[in-house]
Image 1 (cartoon, one colour):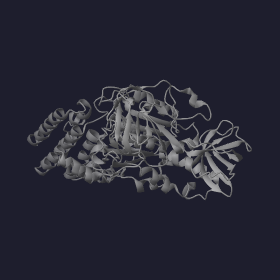
Image 2 (tube, one colour; image 1 turned 120 degrees about the vertical axis):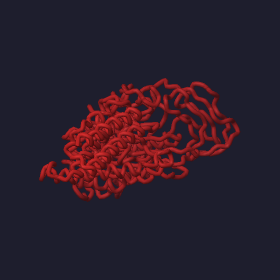
Image 3 (cartoon, helix red, strand yellow; image 1 turned 180 degrees about the horizontal axis):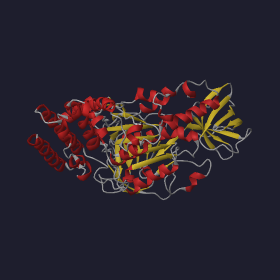
Length: 581
């Protein structure tokens, strides 16, 4: 790290905003500053006429004009290493569990637990030529995710000395490449994207285990999604379900301004839940960045960049990583508060004029890439949006929609009807659907796009007729329209609804989701055919569809054969109505 430059002096303190004198020491934008005797961390966000504007990342109570302010000569960086997996950290990547020293004001962040050691296994030999991103070795005792020790992006040359297999600490030199020492850890400025060789097409689906997402509004690995919804619509529950059941290699969960009890629940569930991929604990391949509502506000602003920097670090090892940010609205509120204190000209609803640019800079760090080492990797970003009063026209929601590939809008009426996840099929979209449909076709499910289109058509028609039925009554509608309303109800209750507390229904494989959707569509198509044959609509409505609707909970998460059996039994009951007519 560059050495500290001589002290400046604090001239003004207003909450997280601190102004200090610049004595011509060459301080640059985004440089880090130590404020006061405790060296509270702050970042330079404005330079004007010898005055530096600093946003403080800790509580500034007791900080006063005249106190020293020391430019540290480097940007806000995250120290990245094997201890991140399974850990809980604050917005500056300081440990919240097992390291109480973080509570001390001005405490340094990113330090590994004392005495930590991991077993190193080299993959290169002395004399071998390597470049940035090349794999030097692996740490065999980190957890279920292979931790690969990589050559730093700026380093290339001949391996002059590689460590032998054995136990190594976080500060040990594992190799010398072109005269530069390389260890198992890295530091990186959180606001700067890590370099890659190039981008790949994002067309492989991220299987979330949630049928309404995977079947109707899918997201690709390396893509982006927003989850807007008012209070009580189930945003946090949906994001937790995705964190638990998606098929990513690493989960980075960023609790940005959320309630502390919710974050505690997330950590407890991740620690208790069995990982379906490894049989161990799910938290062993997760990183939790927690900056709750009672923590310093500007550290909340940094937390989303900290989370995505961690994700890029594991992406560069060739892993698929999901970043879940709950919620970006609280992040935007931190931007608004600081802009107000700094006297910036407010834009719509008081948010800073560069809100759209800040959102774009965050979401564009997602992507499916070819790493510097040549391996495929991806970062997928899913961000919750909490619009005040459920107003989806407010600035954060509207600007976020411009930069994401998917939107899963949560509907208040569905939530109040206890339909979870309360994803609105009329207010959601997926720009990845066509590419993912092609992926499914290449992998043996050529009917995926057609099935999805049929389901959306059925739901749209049922919604249209439902509004009409509220006016004139269902009995007044023609038979085909009554069957269309029945089809919509079966789809909602038998496919789109999902019980997060039921072992068989908390997650669902893509094969079972397709089987459930095919079963409902086949039954409703048979009902339309029987109506054409003269069977009264009320007779079809009286059929017991309960076993088919309950198949989502009554069968195993991969119970395709059981679903097919229920479909055949339901079709037989439907066909029996012809004889009764």
